[in-house]
Length: 174
Image (cartoon, rainbow, N blue to C red; front, top):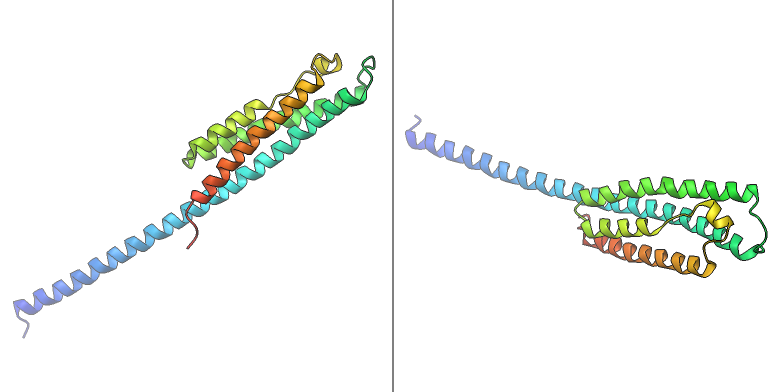
């Protein structure tokens, strides 16, 4: 015969089992979610690093071509149409790279890395291009260009140090 105490005993056992099961399920789901978020953040940081590397290559190529042309051609020599086309193409690539860096900056902001985003914005804003006519007329001094090139490369290094720190702050996969 079933007594009220047996019923209560069974109810308590079932209730405790369900409670324990619920707590364990919640903890496992929470740990899984945190692991997925950490992996997504690490993937995002790796993607940002690749975007910055591509942009940096484009900007460096632009600056090297401009500096080399200014350095290697006589002052009275006009810029050829081919060189103007090459510089314009490189300028367009740098311009397209800005859009990628804006996207990368927003991803950093979304993943709560405001310092990295700020340094990325400073780096991107430090890279500029000049009108072909200004280059052809040699309105820009070659030493000033070299110093400018070095300055934006330094901003890139500052950003990359912070990005590495953000990567290290992200919990490791367990």
